[in-house]
Image 1: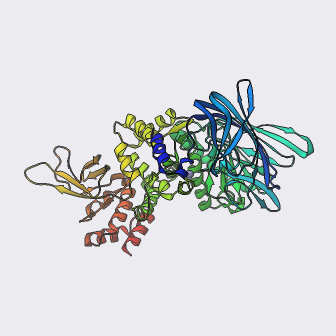
Image 2: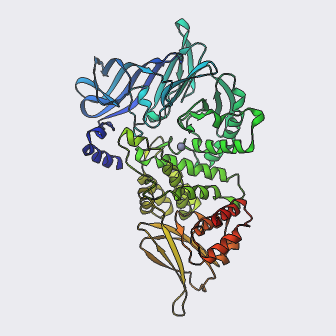
Image 3: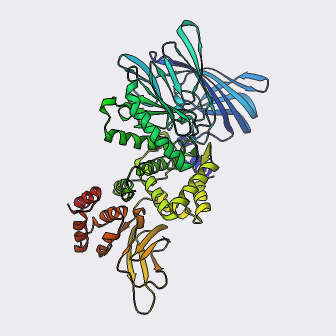
Length: 592
Ligand SMILES: [Zn+2]
Protein backbone atom coordinates (compact mmCIF):
# COMPACT_ATOMS: atom_id res chain seq x y z
CA UNK A 1 0.00 0.00 0.00
CA UNK A 2 2.61 2.51 1.04
CA UNK A 3 4.70 1.71 -2.00
CA UNK A 4 1.87 2.66 -4.32
CA UNK A 5 1.76 6.09 -2.67
CA UNK A 6 5.51 6.56 -3.02
CA UNK A 7 5.29 5.57 -6.66
CA UNK A 8 2.46 8.04 -7.30
CA UNK A 9 4.49 10.97 -5.99
CA UNK A 10 7.44 9.65 -7.87
CA UNK A 11 5.79 9.62 -11.26
CA UNK A 12 5.07 13.32 -11.06
CA UNK A 13 8.42 14.11 -9.46
CA UNK A 14 10.81 14.04 -12.39
CA UNK A 15 11.56 12.24 -15.60
CA UNK A 16 14.64 10.64 -14.10
CA UNK A 17 12.89 9.17 -11.09
CA UNK A 18 10.08 8.02 -13.37
CA UNK A 19 12.42 5.38 -14.72
CA UNK A 20 13.80 4.27 -11.35
CA UNK A 21 10.91 1.97 -10.43
CA UNK A 22 9.48 -0.52 -12.88
CA UNK A 23 5.79 -0.32 -13.80
CA UNK A 24 3.51 -2.78 -12.04
CA UNK A 25 1.73 -4.51 -14.97
CA UNK A 26 4.35 -7.23 -15.35
CA UNK A 27 5.20 -9.34 -12.30
CA UNK A 28 7.97 -11.97 -12.46
CA UNK A 29 7.07 -15.49 -11.27
CA UNK A 30 10.36 -17.29 -11.83
CA UNK A 31 13.77 -16.30 -13.16
CA UNK A 32 16.09 -18.85 -14.79
CA UNK A 33 19.68 -17.80 -15.38
CA UNK A 34 22.53 -19.55 -17.16
CA UNK A 35 25.98 -17.94 -17.12
CA UNK A 36 29.35 -18.86 -18.62
CA UNK A 37 32.05 -17.49 -16.36
CA UNK A 38 35.82 -17.75 -16.57
CA UNK A 39 37.27 -15.31 -14.01
CA UNK A 40 40.42 -14.99 -16.15
CA UNK A 41 38.28 -13.28 -18.82
CA UNK A 42 36.82 -9.81 -18.56
CA UNK A 43 33.50 -10.76 -20.15
CA UNK A 44 30.92 -13.44 -19.47
CA UNK A 45 27.92 -14.77 -21.44
CA UNK A 46 24.45 -15.02 -20.04
CA UNK A 47 20.95 -16.09 -20.92
CA UNK A 48 17.81 -15.56 -18.88
CA UNK A 49 14.33 -16.91 -19.12
CA UNK A 50 11.86 -14.92 -17.05
CA UNK A 51 8.32 -16.17 -16.46
CA UNK A 52 6.10 -13.13 -16.05
CA UNK A 53 2.44 -12.52 -15.39
CA UNK A 54 0.97 -9.53 -17.22
CA UNK A 55 -1.81 -8.24 -15.01
CA UNK A 56 -2.93 -5.67 -17.59
CA UNK A 57 -2.38 -5.64 -21.37
CA UNK A 58 1.09 -4.30 -22.22
CA UNK A 59 3.10 -4.56 -25.41
CA UNK A 60 6.37 -3.64 -23.72
CA UNK A 61 7.76 -5.37 -20.65
CA UNK A 62 10.30 -3.23 -18.76
CA UNK A 63 13.25 -4.85 -17.03
CA UNK A 64 16.29 -3.54 -15.23
CA UNK A 65 19.57 -4.04 -17.11
CA UNK A 66 22.79 -2.07 -16.98
CA UNK A 67 25.73 -2.39 -19.38
CA UNK A 68 24.50 -5.71 -20.81
CA UNK A 69 24.79 -5.81 -24.65
CA UNK A 70 21.88 -7.98 -25.82
CA UNK A 71 22.29 -10.46 -28.66
CA UNK A 72 18.73 -11.77 -28.87
CA UNK A 73 15.33 -11.42 -27.21
CA UNK A 74 12.13 -13.48 -27.57
CA UNK A 75 8.71 -13.47 -26.01
CA UNK A 76 6.95 -16.80 -25.68
CA UNK A 77 3.26 -17.12 -24.92
CA UNK A 78 1.55 -20.47 -25.19
CA UNK A 79 2.76 -22.08 -28.42
CA UNK A 80 3.94 -18.84 -29.98
CA UNK A 81 7.55 -17.69 -29.73
CA UNK A 82 8.32 -14.34 -31.35
CA UNK A 83 11.49 -12.31 -31.61
CA UNK A 84 11.16 -9.10 -29.60
CA UNK A 85 12.64 -5.67 -30.09
CA UNK A 86 14.89 -4.35 -27.32
CA UNK A 87 14.21 -0.73 -26.46
CA UNK A 88 17.01 0.97 -24.60
CA UNK A 89 15.57 3.35 -22.01
CA UNK A 90 17.67 4.87 -19.24
CA UNK A 91 21.01 3.42 -18.16
CA UNK A 92 19.03 1.33 -15.73
CA UNK A 93 16.45 -0.49 -17.83
CA UNK A 94 15.36 -1.90 -21.17
CA UNK A 95 11.99 -2.52 -22.76
CA UNK A 96 11.16 -5.85 -24.41
CA UNK A 97 8.67 -5.06 -27.15
CA UNK A 98 6.60 -7.99 -28.36
CA UNK A 99 4.91 -5.90 -31.10
CA UNK A 100 1.37 -6.38 -29.76
CA UNK A 101 -0.32 -6.24 -26.35
CA UNK A 102 0.18 -9.26 -24.14
CA UNK A 103 -1.80 -10.34 -21.11
CA UNK A 104 -1.52 -13.27 -18.69
CA UNK A 105 1.52 -15.54 -18.43
CA UNK A 106 4.45 -15.10 -20.83
CA UNK A 107 8.14 -15.95 -20.89
CA UNK A 108 10.89 -13.54 -21.88
CA UNK A 109 14.15 -15.03 -23.16
CA UNK A 110 17.25 -12.88 -23.53
CA UNK A 111 20.82 -13.75 -24.49
CA UNK A 112 23.46 -11.17 -23.64
CA UNK A 113 27.00 -10.45 -22.59
CA UNK A 114 28.29 -8.83 -19.39
CA UNK A 115 31.50 -7.59 -17.81
CA UNK A 116 33.40 -8.75 -14.74
CA UNK A 117 34.76 -5.50 -13.39
CA UNK A 118 38.27 -5.69 -11.96
CA UNK A 119 38.11 -2.31 -10.17
CA UNK A 120 34.55 -2.10 -8.77
CA UNK A 121 33.39 -3.98 -5.68
CA UNK A 122 29.76 -4.20 -6.71
CA UNK A 123 27.85 -5.99 -9.42
CA UNK A 124 29.80 -8.94 -10.84
CA UNK A 125 33.55 -8.46 -10.38
CA UNK A 126 36.82 -10.35 -10.46
CA UNK A 127 40.02 -10.20 -8.49
CA UNK A 128 43.43 -11.85 -8.79
CA UNK A 129 44.50 -13.27 -5.43
CA UNK A 130 47.78 -15.11 -4.89
CA UNK A 131 48.14 -15.58 -8.64
CA UNK A 132 44.62 -16.95 -9.29
CA UNK A 133 41.54 -15.20 -10.71
CA UNK A 134 38.22 -15.38 -8.85
CA UNK A 135 34.78 -13.99 -9.76
CA UNK A 136 32.47 -12.58 -7.04
CA UNK A 137 29.21 -10.66 -6.76
CA UNK A 138 27.71 -7.98 -4.53
CA UNK A 139 24.32 -6.82 -5.77
CA UNK A 140 22.53 -5.01 -2.93
CA UNK A 141 20.81 -2.71 -3.47
CA UNK A 142 20.70 -2.18 -7.29
CA UNK A 143 23.57 -3.97 -9.03
CA UNK A 144 21.99 -7.33 -9.93
CA UNK A 145 21.01 -5.59 -13.18
CA UNK A 146 24.71 -5.63 -14.13
CA UNK A 147 24.69 -9.42 -14.30
CA UNK A 148 21.28 -10.27 -15.75
CA UNK A 149 18.19 -8.42 -17.02
CA UNK A 150 15.78 -8.74 -14.09
CA UNK A 151 13.12 -7.13 -11.94
CA UNK A 152 15.62 -5.49 -9.60
CA UNK A 153 13.42 -4.30 -6.74
CA UNK A 154 12.79 -5.92 -3.34
CA UNK A 155 9.01 -6.26 -3.98
CA UNK A 156 9.70 -8.73 -6.82
CA UNK A 157 10.62 -11.98 -5.06
CA UNK A 158 10.78 -15.12 -7.18
CA UNK A 159 12.42 -18.55 -7.13
CA UNK A 160 15.70 -18.54 -9.08
CA UNK A 161 17.07 -21.41 -11.15
CA UNK A 162 20.75 -20.76 -11.61
CA UNK A 163 23.37 -22.72 -13.52
CA UNK A 164 26.92 -21.66 -14.29
CA UNK A 165 29.27 -23.02 -16.94
CA UNK A 166 32.81 -22.92 -15.57
CA UNK A 167 36.29 -24.28 -16.33
CA UNK A 168 36.79 -27.87 -15.23
CA UNK A 169 39.41 -26.89 -12.60
CA UNK A 170 37.11 -24.33 -10.91
CA UNK A 171 34.32 -24.51 -8.37
CA UNK A 172 31.11 -22.46 -8.42
CA UNK A 173 28.80 -21.49 -5.55
CA UNK A 174 25.42 -19.80 -5.49
CA UNK A 175 22.43 -19.43 -3.15
CA UNK A 176 21.13 -22.96 -3.73
CA UNK A 177 23.01 -26.18 -3.07
CA UNK A 178 24.75 -27.79 -6.05
CA UNK A 179 22.43 -30.27 -7.83
CA UNK A 180 24.70 -31.57 -10.57
CA UNK A 181 27.93 -31.08 -12.44
CA UNK A 182 27.99 -32.06 -16.13
CA UNK A 183 31.20 -32.35 -18.15
CA UNK A 184 31.18 -30.38 -21.42
CA UNK A 185 33.66 -30.08 -24.28
CA UNK A 186 36.82 -27.94 -24.37
CA UNK A 187 37.49 -28.09 -20.62
CA UNK A 188 34.13 -26.72 -19.45
CA UNK A 189 31.50 -28.13 -17.09
CA UNK A 190 27.97 -26.99 -16.22
CA UNK A 191 27.06 -26.65 -12.52
CA UNK A 192 23.34 -26.58 -11.74
CA UNK A 193 22.03 -25.25 -8.43
CA UNK A 194 18.81 -26.09 -6.61
CA UNK A 195 15.88 -23.71 -7.19
CA UNK A 196 15.95 -21.06 -4.48
CA UNK A 197 13.15 -19.96 -2.20
CA UNK A 198 11.63 -16.64 -3.42
CA UNK A 199 14.41 -14.02 -3.38
CA UNK A 200 14.71 -10.44 -4.60
CA UNK A 201 17.33 -10.03 -7.35
CA UNK A 202 19.65 -8.11 -5.02
CA UNK A 203 20.06 -11.19 -2.79
CA UNK A 204 21.19 -13.49 -5.62
CA UNK A 205 24.92 -14.27 -5.43
CA UNK A 206 27.53 -16.51 -7.00
CA UNK A 207 31.28 -17.05 -7.01
CA UNK A 208 33.61 -18.89 -9.41
CA UNK A 209 37.26 -19.84 -8.99
CA UNK A 210 39.75 -22.36 -7.58
CA UNK A 211 38.21 -22.15 -4.08
CA UNK A 212 38.88 -24.36 -1.06
CA UNK A 213 36.16 -25.38 1.38
CA UNK A 214 36.17 -25.83 5.16
CA UNK A 215 33.41 -28.28 6.10
CA UNK A 216 31.61 -26.84 9.13
CA UNK A 217 29.29 -29.84 9.63
CA UNK A 218 25.64 -29.36 10.60
CA UNK A 219 24.34 -26.42 12.68
CA UNK A 220 20.98 -25.81 14.37
CA UNK A 221 17.99 -27.64 12.83
CA UNK A 222 20.09 -29.57 10.29
CA UNK A 223 21.74 -26.83 8.19
CA UNK A 224 25.02 -27.83 6.46
CA UNK A 225 27.65 -25.13 6.96
CA UNK A 226 30.73 -24.46 4.82
CA UNK A 227 33.36 -21.75 4.82
CA UNK A 228 34.64 -20.99 1.32
CA UNK A 229 38.12 -19.55 1.01
CA UNK A 230 40.71 -18.78 -1.61
CA UNK A 231 42.90 -21.75 -2.58
CA UNK A 232 45.06 -22.98 0.29
CA UNK A 233 43.20 -21.14 3.10
CA UNK A 234 40.51 -23.64 4.15
CA UNK A 235 41.93 -24.15 7.67
CA UNK A 236 41.30 -20.45 8.39
CA UNK A 237 37.55 -21.10 8.26
CA UNK A 238 37.44 -23.01 11.56
CA UNK A 239 36.41 -20.03 13.75
CA UNK A 240 33.64 -19.02 11.32
CA UNK A 241 32.10 -22.50 11.39
CA UNK A 242 32.28 -22.56 15.21
CA UNK A 243 30.55 -19.17 15.35
CA UNK A 244 27.65 -20.46 13.23
CA UNK A 245 27.29 -23.53 15.46
CA UNK A 246 26.81 -21.11 18.38
CA UNK A 247 24.65 -18.45 16.71
CA UNK A 248 22.25 -20.26 14.35
CA UNK A 249 20.46 -22.26 17.10
CA UNK A 250 19.90 -19.05 19.14
CA UNK A 251 18.19 -17.37 16.19
CA UNK A 252 16.08 -20.44 15.45
CA UNK A 253 15.02 -20.58 19.10
CA UNK A 254 14.13 -16.86 19.23
CA UNK A 255 12.13 -16.79 15.99
CA UNK A 256 10.61 -20.25 16.42
CA UNK A 257 11.31 -20.84 12.70
CA UNK A 258 14.11 -23.12 11.42
CA UNK A 259 16.62 -21.59 8.99
CA UNK A 260 14.77 -21.58 5.67
CA UNK A 261 17.42 -21.59 2.93
CA UNK A 262 18.75 -25.15 2.89
CA UNK A 263 22.51 -24.72 3.21
CA UNK A 264 24.63 -21.96 4.67
CA UNK A 265 27.96 -21.05 3.07
CA UNK A 266 30.18 -18.23 4.30
CA UNK A 267 32.39 -16.91 1.50
CA UNK A 268 35.54 -14.80 2.02
CA UNK A 269 36.04 -11.88 -0.40
CA UNK A 270 39.56 -10.45 -0.76
CA UNK A 271 37.89 -7.02 -1.00
CA UNK A 272 34.26 -6.07 -0.48
CA UNK A 273 32.02 -3.02 -0.65
CA UNK A 274 30.51 -3.97 2.73
CA UNK A 275 31.81 -5.81 5.82
CA UNK A 276 29.43 -8.62 4.90
CA UNK A 277 26.34 -9.23 2.73
CA UNK A 278 23.55 -11.58 3.84
CA UNK A 279 22.76 -13.40 0.54
CA UNK A 280 20.65 -16.43 1.56
CA UNK A 281 22.74 -19.59 1.42
CA UNK A 282 25.89 -17.67 0.42
CA UNK A 283 26.79 -14.92 2.89
CA UNK A 284 29.85 -12.97 1.77
CA UNK A 285 32.40 -11.28 4.07
CA UNK A 286 35.60 -9.31 3.74
CA UNK A 287 38.30 -11.93 4.37
CA UNK A 288 39.68 -10.22 7.47
CA UNK A 289 36.23 -10.34 9.12
CA UNK A 290 35.74 -14.07 8.46
CA UNK A 291 39.02 -15.97 8.36
CA UNK A 292 41.78 -16.41 10.91
CA UNK A 293 44.65 -18.92 11.09
CA UNK A 294 43.72 -21.46 13.81
CA UNK A 295 46.71 -20.53 16.00
CA UNK A 296 45.77 -16.83 15.91
CA UNK A 297 42.14 -17.07 17.09
CA UNK A 298 41.64 -14.60 19.95
CA UNK A 299 38.62 -14.03 22.19
CA UNK A 300 38.17 -10.55 20.69
CA UNK A 301 38.20 -11.88 17.11
CA UNK A 302 35.73 -14.69 17.72
CA UNK A 303 33.41 -12.36 19.64
CA UNK A 304 33.41 -9.86 16.76
CA UNK A 305 32.84 -12.73 14.32
CA UNK A 306 29.87 -14.10 16.30
CA UNK A 307 28.39 -10.62 16.49
CA UNK A 308 28.80 -10.11 12.72
CA UNK A 309 27.32 -13.55 11.99
CA UNK A 310 24.42 -12.83 14.37
CA UNK A 311 23.68 -9.77 12.20
CA UNK A 312 24.04 -11.59 8.85
CA UNK A 313 22.30 -14.79 9.92
CA UNK A 314 19.66 -12.65 11.67
CA UNK A 315 18.89 -11.25 8.21
CA UNK A 316 17.85 -14.73 7.08
CA UNK A 317 14.61 -14.03 8.98
CA UNK A 318 14.56 -10.22 8.93
CA UNK A 319 15.27 -9.23 5.32
CA UNK A 320 15.32 -12.58 3.53
CA UNK A 321 12.41 -14.69 4.82
CA UNK A 322 10.44 -11.42 5.11
CA UNK A 323 11.71 -8.66 2.82
CA UNK A 324 10.86 -4.95 3.03
CA UNK A 325 8.39 -4.10 0.26
CA UNK A 326 10.51 -1.13 -0.77
CA UNK A 327 13.93 0.32 0.09
CA UNK A 328 12.16 3.09 2.05
CA UNK A 329 11.52 0.41 4.68
CA UNK A 330 15.02 -1.10 4.64
CA UNK A 331 15.13 -0.59 8.43
CA UNK A 332 12.89 -3.72 8.62
CA UNK A 333 16.01 -5.51 7.44
CA UNK A 334 19.00 -3.52 8.81
CA UNK A 335 17.45 -2.19 12.02
CA UNK A 336 16.31 -5.71 12.89
CA UNK A 337 19.62 -7.39 12.07
CA UNK A 338 21.46 -4.84 14.23
CA UNK A 339 19.00 -5.19 17.11
CA UNK A 340 18.88 -8.99 17.04
CA UNK A 341 22.67 -9.28 16.84
CA UNK A 342 22.95 -7.34 20.13
CA UNK A 343 20.18 -9.47 21.61
CA UNK A 344 21.84 -12.75 20.63
CA UNK A 345 25.21 -11.51 21.94
CA UNK A 346 23.56 -10.54 25.26
CA UNK A 347 22.98 -14.28 25.78
CA UNK A 348 26.73 -14.48 26.46
CA UNK A 349 26.56 -11.77 29.15
CA UNK A 350 25.63 -12.00 32.85
CA UNK A 351 22.10 -10.60 33.49
CA UNK A 352 23.43 -7.32 34.95
CA UNK A 353 25.20 -6.51 31.66
CA UNK A 354 22.19 -7.11 29.37
CA UNK A 355 21.53 -4.17 26.96
CA UNK A 356 24.80 -2.36 27.82
CA UNK A 357 26.21 -2.83 24.29
CA UNK A 358 22.91 -1.71 22.69
CA UNK A 359 22.73 1.36 24.98
CA UNK A 360 26.30 2.38 24.13
CA UNK A 361 25.45 2.02 20.40
CA UNK A 362 22.26 4.06 20.94
CA UNK A 363 24.32 6.81 22.55
CA UNK A 364 26.54 7.03 19.46
CA UNK A 365 23.57 7.51 17.13
CA UNK A 366 21.79 9.92 19.51
CA UNK A 367 24.89 12.12 19.29
CA UNK A 368 24.21 12.76 15.58
CA UNK A 369 20.41 12.44 15.53
CA UNK A 370 19.32 15.95 14.59
CA UNK A 371 18.24 17.52 11.29
CA UNK A 372 21.63 19.17 10.73
CA UNK A 373 23.65 15.97 10.98
CA UNK A 374 21.30 13.12 10.15
CA UNK A 375 18.17 12.00 8.32
CA UNK A 376 15.07 10.08 9.40
CA UNK A 377 15.27 6.27 9.44
CA UNK A 378 12.62 6.09 6.71
CA UNK A 379 13.24 8.15 3.61
CA UNK A 380 12.20 7.94 -0.04
CA UNK A 381 14.63 6.14 -2.34
CA UNK A 382 13.87 7.19 -5.91
CA UNK A 383 17.09 7.41 -7.89
CA UNK A 384 20.52 5.80 -8.19
CA UNK A 385 21.80 8.77 -6.19
CA UNK A 386 19.41 8.32 -3.26
CA UNK A 387 19.99 4.54 -3.43
CA UNK A 388 23.58 5.22 -2.33
CA UNK A 389 22.08 6.26 1.01
CA UNK A 390 20.01 3.08 1.50
CA UNK A 391 22.52 1.74 4.03
CA UNK A 392 22.96 4.95 6.03
CA UNK A 393 24.07 4.11 9.60
CA UNK A 394 20.95 5.77 11.04
CA UNK A 395 18.87 2.98 9.44
CA UNK A 396 20.91 0.42 11.39
CA UNK A 397 21.60 2.15 14.68
CA UNK A 398 18.48 4.22 15.24
CA UNK A 399 16.38 1.41 13.77
CA UNK A 400 17.88 -0.98 16.35
CA UNK A 401 17.41 1.54 19.20
CA UNK A 402 13.72 1.93 18.28
CA UNK A 403 13.29 -1.86 18.42
CA UNK A 404 14.96 -1.93 21.85
CA UNK A 405 12.43 0.69 22.96
CA UNK A 406 9.46 -1.23 21.53
CA UNK A 407 10.62 -4.39 23.28
CA UNK A 408 10.94 -2.52 26.61
CA UNK A 409 7.54 -0.89 26.20
CA UNK A 410 5.50 -3.86 24.90
CA UNK A 411 7.34 -6.47 27.02
CA UNK A 412 9.96 -8.99 25.94
CA UNK A 413 7.57 -11.96 25.50
CA UNK A 414 4.80 -10.03 23.75
CA UNK A 415 7.34 -8.39 21.46
CA UNK A 416 8.84 -11.78 20.51
CA UNK A 417 5.39 -13.24 19.91
CA UNK A 418 4.48 -10.26 17.74
CA UNK A 419 7.64 -10.73 15.69
CA UNK A 420 6.95 -14.45 15.31
CA UNK A 421 3.46 -13.64 14.03
CA UNK A 422 4.90 -11.04 11.62
CA UNK A 423 7.48 -13.51 10.27
CA UNK A 424 4.91 -16.27 9.88
CA UNK A 425 2.35 -14.08 8.15
CA UNK A 426 4.80 -12.63 5.59
CA UNK A 427 7.03 -15.70 5.22
CA UNK A 428 8.75 -15.71 1.77
CA UNK A 429 6.97 -12.45 0.96
CA UNK A 430 7.25 -8.72 1.55
CA UNK A 431 6.19 -6.50 4.42
CA UNK A 432 5.94 -2.83 5.38
CA UNK A 433 6.27 -0.91 8.63
CA UNK A 434 2.45 -0.99 8.82
CA UNK A 435 2.51 -4.81 8.68
CA UNK A 436 4.96 -4.87 11.58
CA UNK A 437 2.79 -2.45 13.57
CA UNK A 438 -0.30 -4.60 12.91
CA UNK A 439 1.41 -7.79 14.14
CA UNK A 440 2.81 -6.13 17.28
CA UNK A 441 -0.49 -4.39 17.97
CA UNK A 442 -2.51 -7.61 17.65
CA UNK A 443 -0.31 -9.50 20.10
CA UNK A 444 0.34 -6.74 22.64
CA UNK A 445 -2.94 -4.82 22.59
CA UNK A 446 -0.91 -1.60 22.09
CA UNK A 447 -0.91 -0.20 18.55
CA UNK A 448 2.66 1.09 18.02
CA UNK A 449 1.84 2.96 14.77
CA UNK A 450 2.04 6.50 16.18
CA UNK A 451 5.21 5.71 18.10
CA UNK A 452 6.82 4.20 14.99
CA UNK A 453 5.76 7.21 12.97
CA UNK A 454 7.32 9.59 15.52
CA UNK A 455 10.67 7.84 15.70
CA UNK A 456 11.08 6.55 12.13
CA UNK A 457 9.95 9.58 10.17
CA UNK A 458 11.54 12.47 12.06
CA UNK A 459 15.00 13.28 13.40
CA UNK A 460 15.87 14.28 16.93
CA UNK A 461 15.98 12.83 20.44
CA UNK A 462 12.99 13.73 22.65
CA UNK A 463 13.83 15.28 26.03
CA UNK A 464 11.76 14.38 29.07
CA UNK A 465 11.57 15.94 32.52
CA UNK A 466 9.84 14.36 35.48
CA UNK A 467 8.50 15.81 38.70
CA UNK A 468 6.78 14.14 41.64
CA UNK A 469 3.68 16.02 42.73
CA UNK A 470 3.03 15.27 46.37
CA UNK A 471 0.67 17.50 48.36
CA UNK A 472 -1.86 17.05 51.15
CA UNK A 473 -4.90 17.41 48.94
CA UNK A 474 -4.48 14.77 46.22
CA UNK A 475 -2.74 11.40 45.81
CA UNK A 476 0.90 11.48 44.57
CA UNK A 477 1.37 11.91 40.83
CA UNK A 478 4.28 11.92 38.45
CA UNK A 479 4.27 14.76 35.95
CA UNK A 480 6.27 14.12 32.79
CA UNK A 481 6.86 16.83 30.20
CA UNK A 482 8.42 16.37 26.81
CA UNK A 483 10.13 18.81 24.49
CA UNK A 484 8.96 17.73 21.04
CA UNK A 485 5.74 16.66 19.34
CA UNK A 486 4.93 13.01 18.67
CA UNK A 487 4.19 9.86 20.68
CA UNK A 488 6.85 8.72 23.15
CA UNK A 489 6.45 5.55 25.24
CA UNK A 490 7.94 6.20 28.66
CA UNK A 491 8.57 3.43 31.15
CA UNK A 492 9.17 4.64 34.72
CA UNK A 493 9.49 3.32 38.21
CA UNK A 494 9.91 4.76 41.66
CA UNK A 495 10.89 3.69 45.16
CA UNK A 496 8.57 0.74 45.99
CA UNK A 497 6.63 1.34 42.76
CA UNK A 498 7.24 -1.28 40.06
CA UNK A 499 7.85 -0.30 36.44
CA UNK A 500 4.95 0.69 34.19
CA UNK A 501 4.71 2.37 30.81
CA UNK A 502 2.62 5.22 29.38
CA UNK A 503 2.65 6.73 25.91
CA UNK A 504 3.15 10.50 26.17
CA UNK A 505 1.18 12.37 23.54
CA UNK A 506 0.91 16.01 24.63
CA UNK A 507 3.61 18.26 26.11
CA UNK A 508 2.69 17.41 29.72
CA UNK A 509 1.19 14.24 31.23
CA UNK A 510 0.27 13.53 34.82
CA UNK A 511 0.44 9.89 35.85
CA UNK A 512 -1.31 8.78 39.04
CA UNK A 513 0.78 6.51 41.27
CA UNK A 514 -0.89 3.25 42.37
CA UNK A 515 -3.59 3.83 44.98
CA UNK A 516 -2.27 4.05 48.51
CA UNK A 517 1.32 4.85 47.49
CA UNK A 518 3.07 7.33 49.76
CA UNK A 519 5.23 10.00 48.13
CA UNK A 520 8.25 7.96 46.89
CA UNK A 521 11.82 8.94 47.81
CA UNK A 522 12.92 8.74 44.16
CA UNK A 523 11.69 8.04 40.64
CA UNK A 524 13.48 7.00 37.46
CA UNK A 525 12.13 7.91 34.02
CA UNK A 526 13.69 5.26 31.79
CA UNK A 527 13.19 1.91 33.48
CA UNK A 528 15.14 -0.86 31.82
CA UNK A 529 17.14 1.90 30.06
CA UNK A 530 15.40 1.00 26.79
CA UNK A 531 13.74 4.34 25.85
CA UNK A 532 15.01 6.44 22.96
CA UNK A 533 14.95 9.78 24.81
CA UNK A 534 16.99 11.91 27.18
CA UNK A 535 15.88 12.51 30.72
CA UNK A 536 16.82 15.98 31.94
CA UNK A 537 17.39 15.90 35.70
CA UNK A 538 17.18 19.14 37.69
CA UNK A 539 18.18 16.99 40.67
CA UNK A 540 20.04 13.72 39.95
CA UNK A 541 18.27 10.64 41.42
CA UNK A 542 21.15 9.96 43.83
CA UNK A 543 19.00 7.92 46.22
CA UNK A 544 18.06 5.56 43.38
CA UNK A 545 21.64 4.64 42.41
CA UNK A 546 21.89 1.48 44.49
CA UNK A 547 18.52 0.28 43.14
CA UNK A 548 19.11 0.84 39.41
CA UNK A 549 20.06 -1.94 36.98
CA UNK A 550 23.24 -1.77 34.85
CA UNK A 551 21.23 -0.63 31.80
CA UNK A 552 19.57 2.11 33.87
CA UNK A 553 22.86 3.31 35.40
CA UNK A 554 24.55 3.53 31.98
CA UNK A 555 21.56 5.45 30.58
CA UNK A 556 21.74 7.77 33.60
CA UNK A 557 25.44 8.45 33.01
CA UNK A 558 24.69 9.52 29.43
CA UNK A 559 21.72 11.65 30.56
CA UNK A 560 23.71 13.42 33.29
CA UNK A 561 26.68 14.09 31.06
CA UNK A 562 25.34 17.37 29.69
CA UNK A 563 24.26 18.62 33.10
CA UNK A 564 26.60 20.89 35.01
CA UNK A 565 24.55 21.01 38.23
CA UNK A 566 26.17 19.88 41.45
CA UNK A 567 23.90 16.88 42.01
CA UNK A 568 24.66 15.54 38.50
CA UNK A 569 28.40 15.95 39.06
CA UNK A 570 28.15 14.22 42.45
CA UNK A 571 26.15 11.31 40.99
CA UNK A 572 28.64 10.91 38.13
CA UNK A 573 31.53 10.98 40.64
CA UNK A 574 29.89 8.08 42.51
CA UNK A 575 29.35 6.20 39.26
CA UNK A 576 33.07 6.38 38.43
CA UNK A 577 33.50 3.56 40.97
CA UNK A 578 30.59 1.50 39.57
CA UNK A 579 31.06 -2.26 39.85
CA UNK A 580 30.68 -2.52 36.05
CA UNK A 581 33.85 -1.29 34.30
CA UNK A 582 31.91 -0.04 31.24
CA UNK A 583 29.64 2.15 33.39
CA UNK A 584 32.57 3.40 35.49
CA UNK A 585 34.48 4.31 32.35
CA UNK A 586 31.46 6.09 30.81
CA UNK A 587 31.10 8.10 34.05
CA UNK A 588 34.77 9.10 33.95
CA UNK A 589 34.34 10.22 30.32
CA UNK A 590 31.21 12.18 31.28
CA UNK A 591 33.14 14.16 33.90
CA UNK A 592 35.90 15.15 31.47
ZN1 LIG B 1 22.74 -5.89 7.51
